Image (cartoon, rainbow, N blue to C red; front, side, top):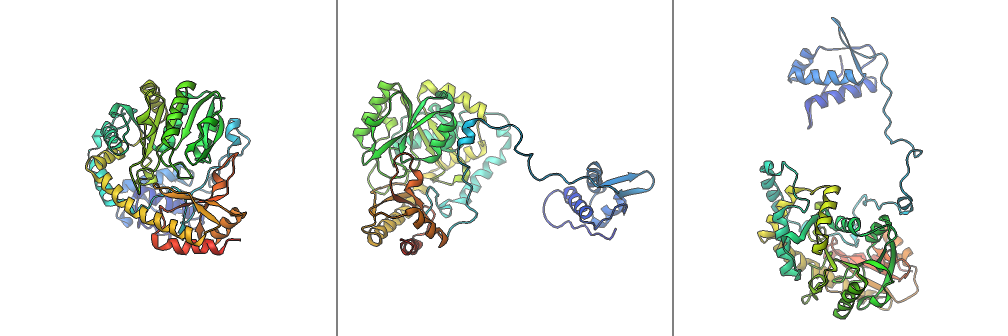
Length: 469
């Protein structure tokens, strides 16, 4: 056999030998009928155990690439197996329910990061204390026996307690450890609420403009999703349609406009929910980053009738890849939500949950929030100042004092979709407000500052300015 086997790289040795011999057969470097060296000889050449080579030969034989002849050795088969298809069977098979066929295609992750990244909802990965996180996670993984069994569907008890303490201090959320359910991000929290609350055809009210993925999730569960306009005080409670069973709101930092819901509107919404026997889902997605005074109390802390389900996420405060969030729901829903979580994925990634519990309890989370808030506050100030100066008369910034993005409403008749497209070709990623509107379109731009360095903001907005028609 003239073909050379290399063991450079990583991975199981027998798998590497198998793949290299298989590829050599497929591309003709090992010809049909050619004899391979005995396992003992090849093992000696490669300085590996004979069993390692024997495992590779056995798999190649089972897959139809080699054949053994008693007393004569191992040979390449004369007829090779047909190559396996690299695609799933055609679309002539089973079809999903009609609601899934009606949804737009999933948004794929960007193939590359834009040079001037004003995308919404992306925190700065460079601010995340990765070395500290690696140390905490390694500490938990060393005690792997502690995670060898199925656990409580509510999640790691230490993390639930840490979340209850932190949310109580930072956001005045009224909850103990038993009230907290750990989830795989805020989106799973919404999914669990849909599972236990909604029947097909139930009416769900959402903010307009609002969070697109929440709308799609409610639609996927068969809900009748109705947009309710938002003004300077938040959701227009008087516009809520009759027979609404669930209302989804972002009262601390309305997405995407950025304005907080006034106390009067919060009080009115809770009173309406009591009369309508409805549930209010409060998504507090990024208000940990505040640049001014303490925010208004969350709906959950004002609720006296058990109508509010409070959703939080670490995707914005830490990293999206961690997929960690939480849900604080009325006690009447607790058992059903735990059942739903167990049926969905049981309890999630316990070592990561345990590491996050230490991260919170050791004060590292609060320290990270303070540092990140200072950075984001500087970017928020720079982008606001630049927009007000460069785009005066064309864009009016909506005042906001929290989060990772801001909104600017258009004051002129301009094709902002075309503006955004020209900016994208020049390396500037920006989203139009119309992308987040349904039945109440409003012209404007939504600009995130979570992942763009402060020194790039001016240049990025200058490019956007040059592409304005």
